[in-house]
Image (cartoon, rainbow, N blue to C red):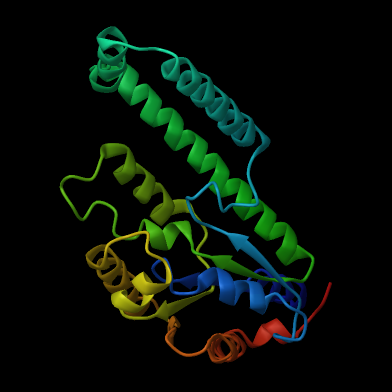
Amino acid sequence: MSAVRRAWAVRFGRTVALLGPDGAGKSTVSRLLEEPGTLPCPVKVIYMGVNPDVASLMLPTTRLARALRRAIARRQKTRHSHQAGPAAGERQGSLRTGMRPTALGVAKDAARLGTWVLEEWYRQSVAWLYLARGYLVVYDRHFVADYHHTGRSPDTPTMARVHGWLLRRAFPRPALLVCLDAPAAVVYARKREDSVEWLEQRRADYLQLAASTPGAAVVDATAPVPEVVAAVASVICTHLPMCGTGGR
C-alpha cells in the first residue's frame, strides 16, 4: 500500500460508535468526548439514531416534511376540538380504524424506507467530510447496530427486514464499537421511556453484537460519568492509535 493510500485509510478509519440502551449515557459521553483535550485529536459527534427530535443533521426535505406534518396535525386537532356530538366522534373513529388499501400501504412504507435510506447516507456523507478534514467521528448510536437483530422475530414488518438487510450489506461500519453497559434497572431509573424488559433485551442485543464483533469493547456505564468518559477515551486510543495523528 502506498503512503498516500495508507494515510487515507488511517484518516477514514477514525470512526467510533457508542452503543447501549436509552439511559446508558451515549449522548452525554459523546458530548464530553468532543470537548478539546479529552482525546489527542479533534472530535465530531454525529447522531446515528432514528429519533428525528434528537438529530441535528437532517435533509432539508425531511425537515420540510416534518414541519408540514406538524402543521396538519395542529390544524386537525384544532378542527376536532371545535366539533361536538356523536357524529364527530364517529368520524374520528372511522379515520383511526379505516383499512387502507394494501397497495397504498406498501407504497407509503416504501416511501418511508427510501426517506430513511437517504437520511442515513446523508449523515454518512457528512461523517466522510469530517474524516477528510482530520476529525475523529464519534457516532451516538449507529443504524447498523440498531438493525443488527432485525428479522429475528417472524412479526418483523417486511420493510424493516429490507431495511436491515440493506444496512448490513451496504452501509459503512464504524472502525470501533463501544458498548456502554448497565443493568436495565439502572438505565430505566435514568430515563423512564421504555420498560425494564425491553431495556434488558436491548442490553443483551448490544452485548451479543459486541461479543461477535472483532475489536469491540464493553465499558461499565454504572460508574461516574468522568470515569466512563476516561474509560471510553482509553479504549479509543488503544484500538485506534491513529487518532493521535494528523489534524485539521
